[in-house]
Every structure is written in C-alpha cells, then in structure tokens.
Length: 114
Length: 111
Image (cartoon, rainbow over all chains, first blue to last red; front, side, top):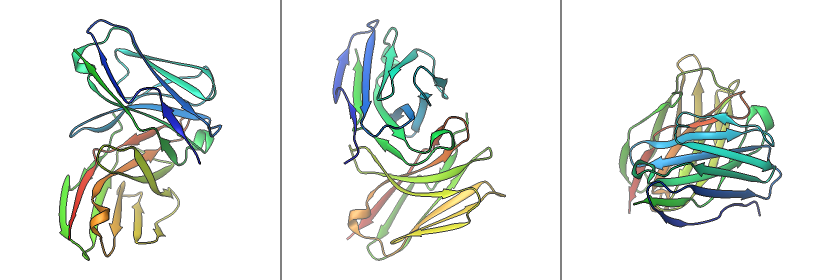
C-alpha cells in the first residue's frame, strides 16, 4: 500500500521559532510537493521538487524553504514562524516524472503558531 | 498565480441526483485531475484526464475537458450520502510535474 507520511499530525509553535515539517514517501516518486490549505482558499503550492536537491517555488514560497537530500524525504522549513503561517500543511508525491501524474497525499500537519 | 477557479463553491443535492462541478484554469496544461477530500482527511485521487483527451469515465464519475475554453467538469451520477466531501480540480504542468489546485467545491448529499 502506497504511503506518504508526515511526521506530526498536530504542532504548536511559538512566533519566531524555526519549524521543520518532515515528509517521507515509500513509492520511489520523483516529484514531491508542499501545500498549505486554508478555508476558502483551497490548496496553495508552497514548493515542489522533481529530483533530489532540486526545488522550485510555488505560488506562496515567502517565509518558507525546503530541503530534499534524499529521494524519499522532503522537508518544509519555516525560518521564523509567524501567526499567519497557522494552517494545515499537506505533503504529496506523484508519479510521472516531469509530465506529472496521480498525487498521493499525507494526512496533513495542523500547525498553530502562537 | 496559476490557481484556477471552481464553481460552485458549495452544492447541496438529494441522494440519487446528479452532481456537476466545474473547473476553469488559466494557462496550457499537461493534464487535469480531480481529487476528493473527506472532512479532516487527506486528499484522494479520483481521475486524471490528459490534455489530448476530451472525456473520461470511472464508475459513476464522468470528466470532460475543453482545452479551448480552459475548463473541465466533473459529473457524479446517482449520488449517495457517502459522496459528501470536498472536491478539488488540479492542473498538471510540464514543469517537473507541477500540480496546482483550485479552491474546491463542497458537496453535500442528503439522504
């Protein structure tokens, strides 16, 4: 059974903290993604990666960075957490290489920044 | 932003009726996908249609794609209460598999 695992289901952090969200997939997919989901706004793409050490900005990269040192792991980093980064964060991986294909999602991390 | 729009934002129907959701997007795509999300859960892939296809079926789902109008529709026939969920369209691009989601349609199917 295919699996995308996010390290935490719920997380509470303080303003200004550096926050790491981890995502691991066991499907040998080239592509991995980080989205945030907010009510009424759908899923917005933060960053994606199509290969190890490769990363591309999505629509809302400000305040975030990513790391992909191994194919199976894609980390999202909030350099200095702010209250407007309180959100549900979803990680996904997909088939299809550069052409893209079906994406598989983790269960999400609900991050609250206080 | 490449984010497209979905219409309607919310849809309420009775069991047995058909549900139609529409998606519009802005730039040329490689494929268009539909996903479902039950409350508090992750997204699940439903169907993918490539840019050179016009219609695709999967069980009670029918998807159409009109690249000239940059739009797609998802039809769920003979809906069931268990179809209650949020439905999202996502556009796939030839840029490292980039995948952009719309804002979603909340479907409520009443028994």
